[in-house]
Image 1 (cartoon, rainbow, N blue to C red):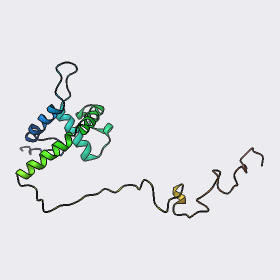
Image 2: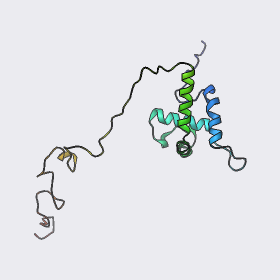
Image 3: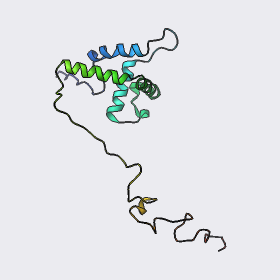
Image 4: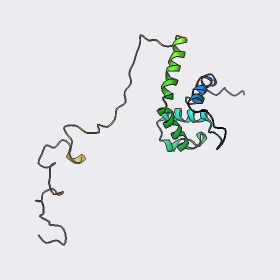
Length: 157
C-alpha cells in the first residue's frame, strides 16, 4: 500500500517562502567568518512559529528546534530589529500580487484574560470579593481584633 504524502506542518516555512525570508535575515545579521558555527536560522524561525502557534513556553520547545535559549535570543533580536514587521509586509505584498486578499472584508480577533486590577467587587482575597467595607476591610492584619490586642497562643492579653 503506498504511503500518503505527508501534509506540511503549520510551523515549517515552505521552501519558496524561505527563499524570500532568508535574504532579510542575512541583511539583518550577516554570518560571521570566525567563531562558533552559526545556528540554522530556518530552524530558529520554525521554532518561533511553533512557539507562537502553540502558545507553549519557550523552555517547552521540542528538542528538534535546538536550544530554547538560543531560539528566544534570536526572537528578541529579530523583534528589536523590526524583522517580523518586514516579513509581514512582504507577505502582505505577495498576497496582494496573487490577489489573495479581499480588502473589503475584515475581521478582528480578541483574547480574553484576567482583569489585572480587578473591578468594583474586589476584596483582599477571593472570599472577600464583592463585600463592601466592614468585613473585607480590616486593620492590624487580623479580623475581629483591635490592633495590638494580641490573643495568640502564649501571649499575654
